[in-house]
Length: 343
Image (cartoon, rainbow, N blue to C red):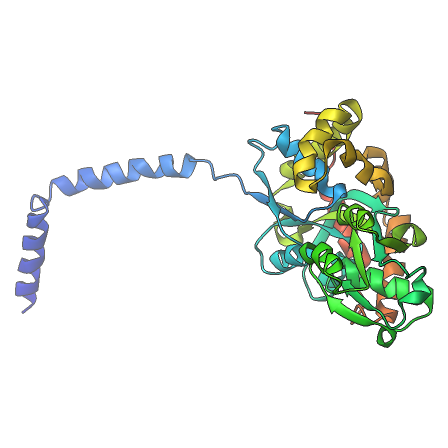
């Protein structure tokens, strides 16, 4: 029986032209010679996918893309309808990085998503707001009213702060969860008495007769937008992060040098006329090179202290279930250094 199996094997090889065993060493030699060629082929550059939603403070990223500065960098921008979707993508590994507010970063961190803050994007100073209908003149007038908010993201934090400032509790108002792309329509259709929103929706609602009863200028330094990267892939992207930081600073400089062209390039995403685009930045302090240097000064910086205070506020207001290691969040910036050059 063994002899039959052996005969069948030789016959099978013969069918493929390998009956002459003198050919086998040559084939093996060719295979070995091919191995170094495979080993020397450079691995593809890892992609750095950055998730964002529409917000003026993130627009310099898209301005850089419009200027063609992202080509060949391995950096791509993924547009989501809300920061809730950005957070979900970070949770499930759909993206490597995301533009989020600091409170949103703390929310992810408490759930075990290991993130590092690598760039300060902006600090909101009035661009985030609670917009109410005519007749609602103050925060206190929100009692008994219906308020729309993206409760799983920044909207939840803003809502908790306005209620705290007004001396109200959550049971004193009716809260309707609304994603960012639902804010404007819900307000226009009278489904809410007020909505927690931000630019550019804020400006459009004011044109509809809305009134600001609370905004981020009343809680200075609390609404901070940052770029975060998943810690597990941080070591794979030091060059990309350097490049991204420099492109960010270059885009901010471009807005100052060429405001008309910058506005023209940004108007489509913001859904505003070009002459209204730059108005959106009036309530936002952008994270330029100097602001970033101060933000990441050292482990005892004001940024870490402010983030710790925010965590404590969120714990009191039951937006966080447990404490977060804030120092760990800021530890990623030391792994790359901005070169100070412009593209």
